[in-house]
Length: 204
Image (cartoon, rainbow, N blue to C red; front, side, top):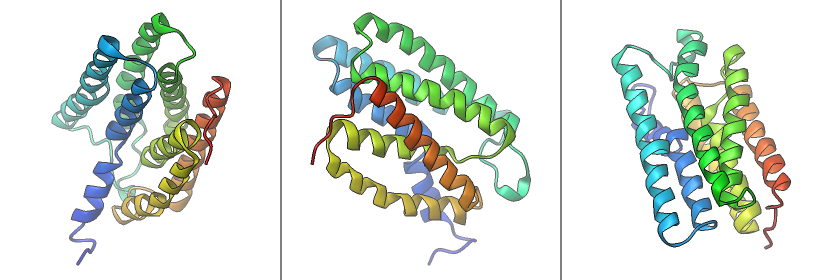
């Protein structure tokens, strides 16, 4: 039985849909739609090292310093702590955007990098004043991108949204409003960026 004193299931769900997992996953999917051969494997290696391992190492280092990024609501503001986690990730995405320019700007991978870079900057500006949900924003970006780039059938991935909402609420990380606004931010930014790149092509 899952209770407030036994939140293992909710912690597991939160981990699975953690931005540090969701962002690399979408970038790898977009890399497969953009590259082939040695360049594909090179990008996958870079994503795993910098967008996945680097982020977890950085978060572990912050935890070692006593910085709590994902505080419960009752512990108050996390503005500065969250920005400490976000800024290095934004710098990594900026570097990858410059490198991906060499392969042409119209491929899906470049759009994904720009999506998370602009989304990360917007999220940082919002999070300085308010605790918007990063889990909701990044998963919404993932589900939206899969739907409009690959197949309209991925619209059914949005059925996972209530599970994410419940896990974040049961862990006392977000309010309904913070989760809804995170979801909307992810969907809107993703649609705008992908439409700008002419990638909204999915059919049923």
